[in-house]
Amino acid sequence: MKRSKLVVANWKMHLNVHQASLLVNRLDKKIAIYRDVEVVLAPNFICLQPISMELDKRKFRLASQDGYFVDEGSYTGAISFSQLRELVHYSIIGHSERRRYFNESLDVVRDKVAAAVRNNITPILCVGETREERNQKETKQVLHDQIVSALSNLTSEDVENLVIGYEPVWAIGGKEPAKPDTIAQAVSWLRYQIGELYGEKVAKSVRIIYGGSDEPEYVNGIMAIEGVDGLLVGHASLNYVQFADIIERVHHSRVIGNEE
Ligand code: 13P
Image 1 (tube, protein in one colour):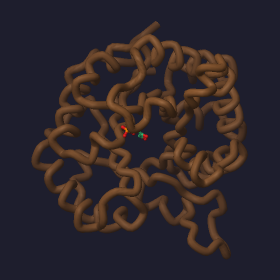
Image 2 (cartoon, helix red, strand yellow; image 1 turned 135 degrees about the vertical axis):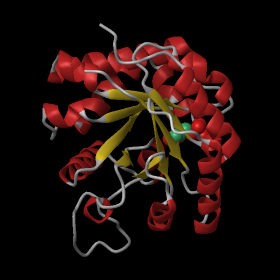
Image 3 (tube, helix red, strand yellow; image 1 turned 45 degrees about the vertical axis):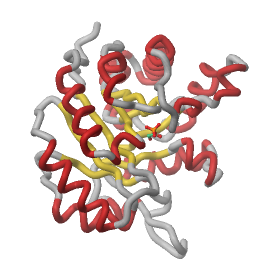
């Protein structure tokens, strides 16, 4: 199956409704429609509704940055995937900042992935090792555990449509992404694991994107890596000139998804 290119803007806990709307407006003027690149914006919860009203849906899709795994009930402060289903195509799930600051366990991430799928939302499942885990040579084990656990309640058809974000925790919020070799090894290990669990066809269909200090100058290098289908952009996505530059470079990068 041929995969398509995907770029996700994770705005994290930045921008109020007014600022987010301004950024969408600027992006809209700056970014052309590229049929080979899907562009997804992930604002905070309160911005989703107003932005969905003004968004050019031929150009952009929306993602939430999280969601709760129960569909409805007495859970003060939570927002469920069933409440998000009319609003977003995607949900970022298991971001390392959620795992770290909000104590999200492997089980919680698994339940959120299943809840998103149940509500017809495509999960962008984030996985990645910390600096310490890398130094201890535990990267493969950590990625294995995160993948096996998060996908354990899904069918192979669900997994086929999934997006995985490889985000080494130590590369987030810095000046430079991980080296191409490092990304290549992790991505091929993730595809191998998915192949072992769900078969070759699923492993070739699942989209894997890279996140961690994605800046325009590094896009060509990252997109040249076999198995990488796109980017999960943090701080550079808050700057419309930089983000538009990233999209354009992704558009000009290699044709993906035909690897044998
Ligand atoms: P930065 O691009 O700011 O490193 O953030 C990456 C990220 O966490 C995207 O989800």
